Image (cartoon, rainbow over all chains, first blue to last red; front, side, top):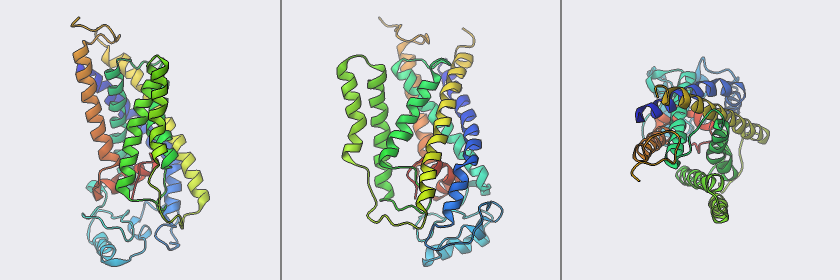
Length: 262
Length: 58
């Protein structure tokens, strides 16, 4: 019985992750590839469709021994080191898992993220005792998008490669805390009755923004500002599409799988 | 009062919480792996996904 609810979430998540991959190709991925041409401080003459020879087109400023080593590794290894960002210290070598293409890596990551977000949404529904159906699925999805994407984006907008940013660990911590507080706040605001719950909900949602997201000291970037603006809108629109599909398909899967033989 | 009638999905309260917490933990693990884990292989594989979802990246 329990397994059926998890299975329904997995089916909805994998379906949404696959659709998300198609949606990303429309606008978000071309913008990422475009921004990578400016990343690393030099205007690399890389055309947009670069999947064919990633080693040749994604090398950024080859400064330092680390970058040089990963460049050599790129020639020796069948695994692409496409995203070894210039001057960045990684403790392990990197490269796309199993030597897959860039697109396959993105598809795999979307499927994993889709399944993960679906399980989180299903878990929130089960723990709070509010079933997700086809009728309310889009609203559940919209709430998920608010908690995971729009509200954190107020402090940390979706960033392109090459954007200036504060320390990664600080931003990840702030991001996780904001997602958790926003989700809790939305629960109090939407699903709990009473004025006190609504006020507490708004306070929880506002708290991380009052505290403030970690910001970079230096705001200069080689990536044109227009690309950044286009990307922020495209990323938020694409993830909204993902969450609406996820909510609806989770509602559908719940009704088809979880309640199949009752 | 052992059986809860709060939810219309006809699970007992214990089963519902058990399933829900399992889903939350499993989901958090997958999202962390795809979006936040500090491993170069995971980062490079999920690079475009991380940017598209607005995860803090780099």
